Length: 278
Image 1 (cartoon, rainbow, N blue to C red):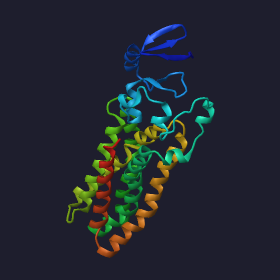
Image 2: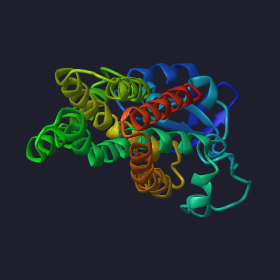
Image 3: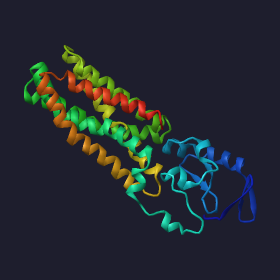
Image 4: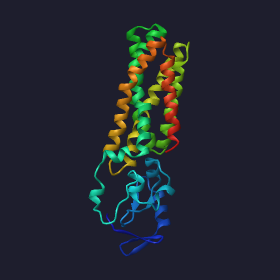
């Protein structure tokens, strides 16, 4: 059912009936879904938001209520009075590029999906070099990083949908877990069993936040969700293309995987720190 909402002080007029904003917010807090109410004014002022939407967009209620929709979610672009709504909803890669949140999510995607592919490229060589495994055994073990994604990707999305954990927490825990796993692989002289456990942990950590990253990316930029997701995905691909030869260069110059895995662990810690800015 559609209705015109007009803000009058601390109340919202729905047709001829006035509803207090505080009462509306209490209703929204009880709803199990991603909901947002905007006023029928030139700025599309946000007047109520569900807790699930706050989690999905990595925002806080005080950052949203009373502010224009496009100012918060579209890189600072404020809806000017008299401009048709259709013009305001045109997807734009420039809008995505101006959003600090989108770039941060791109770093998270790089530190998870990007590193899953990057480590998967080199893990076979690592196991052969450090433990003398056959190529068949090392290749099978290395495939665990990607294979575990079949379980951990839908599991991460399911936990978020059920409200067990927030998208922000999933991203923080998995990026930190990736940094720890990479640090273990960088540790000289680590036993094969420890390395195997670290590889399995990386398989989960690298894949579990996929749904959290992509869903959040689309939600934080409703005017250009496709552009935002495209930018985030592109950053992950660039990281793979650049990172693979860099890892090879570090391994070739040092004769060890300590330096490349330590560098990747350090990168993950930087991304973990950046997540606290969201």
